[in-house]
Image (cartoon, rainbow, N blue to C red):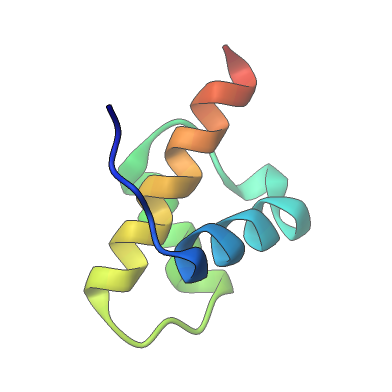
Length: 63
């Protein structure tokens, strides 16, 4: 079973995918940089969690 993510992380990740779909890939490191560029997220931990969520969503969409 997977981890349950907070609503904030899911909502933010989905909004970023809708607005900036072309910036995200299935690579976590690239997504970290992209999230940092396009979103105003205050902490590194939240940035990484959002980037991880976006990475998982992109992998599912491409599968």
